[in-house]
Length: 414
Image (cartoon, rainbow, N blue to C red; front, side, top):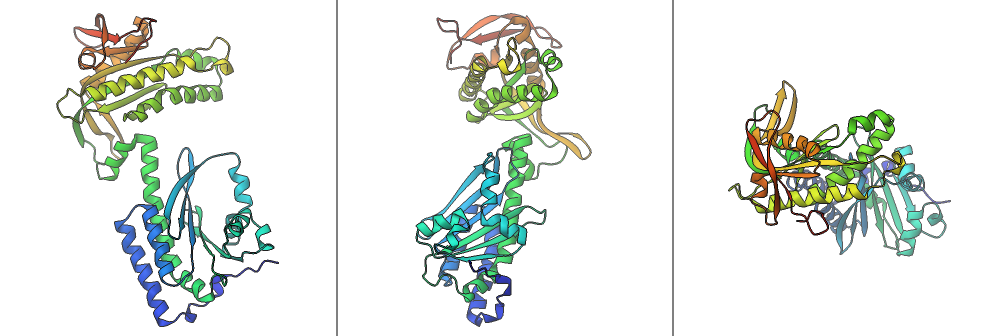
């Protein structure tokens, strides 16, 4: 039977005065380093290196940390002696639950205690990871549960190739530094989760501004930007016809076409309004003549439309079509907090946002998938086609409206 050691039973009194001072130095460094270094890979690299310099024969160290994220279940940070650390996300997948059931993580989470295994042919049959480590020449393995205050279950592991593996002195030193390491990893995970959650719900830059302290109502910044507004055609009719679950599936498929091209070209998605999307592409020049932000916005609009054209909609019915109208405008926006009391929204407002919204509504009446304002079309590197002078509902006068230049086959091109 594999031997299991509970390191909590290893008294710290077995450490020499020098070892106790070393453990204190590592703990103090962790507390200081976590304030100065928010890069998990660099922090974990230095932590494992310091353990090795302290005589702990660690040659592989991993931190397995869960995430609050729409597509990532967590991150896996692995350090190897002489190779540094690599941080890789792992995504939600059907097989993850089975992998977890067959791993040491499940056992340490259930028991709430450390797991220690000498790696040999017999013990390696207990967990797949031990088989992998045995093949790589490792001789000893420790898995330590890291449970955060909110109940989130995480873990760290250490492996050695030394013939004698980890001694009781090594385990006692680990016992001394792990409470501080847990605090540091929890703080770093909280920071990462705050970034991720805000980015998912308000956008990467608005999230950064919020975390930087822009949380008071009326705190706004004016900027020049290309504005993209997309709206699905006939969404009300489709949602009435489809059930709730199918409507959600349709919306997700629609957003999967519209959103990725925006993000890939540096746009910031600020708002979902049912089937509508509001995004901006910032003008970094400060001159209001940014051609790149206009070109990126147009490329995102055309790629989104091409994706919708190729979308297989038969799962929702043979005659279901998913179409969108996209408006593109360039102007000044006020970017910041609006709302009441403790309930705020970080968004863009202003007359140019209103114009873009009215232009988007014109896509339906003019039967065009993409419409551009004069201020947007005039500064494009590529050509555009003048469509005409039209009134926009709720706005005075008439407005010149353009469409992207069409190729010989009738398709739009950038």
